[in-house]
Amino acid sequence: MTAQYTDTIPGSEVKRGLAKDDLIVIAGAGGFIAGSLTRYFTEQGYTNIRAIDRKPLPDWYLRVPGVESISMDLSHEQNAIEAVRGAKEVYNLAADMGGMGFIENFRVECLRSILVNTHLTEASYRAGVSRYFFSSSACAYNTDLQKSPEVIALKESDAYPAMAERGYGWEKLISEMFCQEYWAERGLETHIARFHNIYGPNGTWFGGREKAPAAMSRKVLEALDSGDMRIEIWGDGTQTRSFCYIDDCVHGIDLIMHTPALIATPINLGSSELVSINELVSIVEEIGGVKLERSYKLDAPKGVAGRNSDNTMIQQVLGWEPNTPLRDGMAATYAWIAEQFAARKAGKRVVEG
Image (cartoon, rainbow, N blue to C red; front, side, top):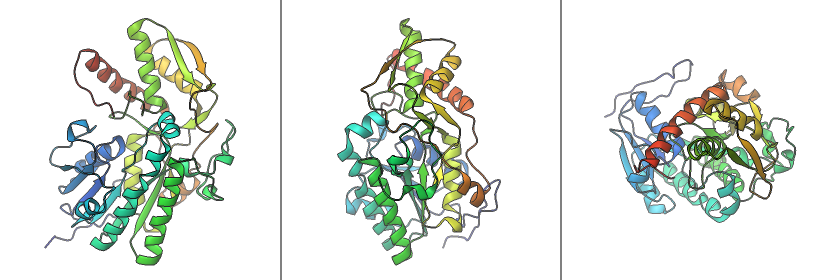
């Protein structure tokens, strides 16, 4: 019989209601965010974590010691059933995704991620899971509201009328609805966060799935290494985004999952610090101590013209919002990618993603 234990999240009054040995299942744990979340809960003292990803174990970004790590494709129903057996909480961060190059060119693969959420919600409901988390995305927002770099920050209600980003965005929006209906009709407590461009160490930095912060860091490092002081930017560089540091993201997931006011209620999880891609490049150049000649690939995938997170709701409900300055987060990200870049150049194996 598991001892009852009510854990409190540091810096808040939110209670997890978890025993340290309650089973936490994290789907997509071979990836960047879910791998970081696995390490986060381990550092919080939880001793019974089941981490799952379809990638072979050697290809995971993070393998956390003491965690049950399983290579399993959760788009198959029986695997989902096995994955959540005995679980108290389930975190679904499994998705086939990447930067805009991947999202725009592999829409079918992105859409097929809905199979994971479909099977995991049903399996979690049948297994009596206490709470279920789904990682949604700002790509679920109406693209008609994102046609200018001077975008108005997106609030949660801006997902409707629906006009999500093709492929990936629609998968997220429909999966959100699954979570909401499982709460309304079947009583499965679900929580939903819309991620806004999460970045940081231990993420994809080459191979085609990397996002802008990692891609720009790699390109600056390549220029320094080769002596070719040029950098190619996708689009015209004026497109704007906000970028949320990984430490803020995993703490935000914890808070959102354990806040009763946010049951079946999508909420933004992102920074409100808006920058253009040109400004992002300048930050990375400053960190790398270099100034590069810029060229612009105007026919490359570049996504919407502007997107930012309206953090009014998260401030009101949680009394908190992601607050790591982009310059600080990029310094840590660049340093980690520099280590990986040097290791790869030396012939050592690094995870591609």
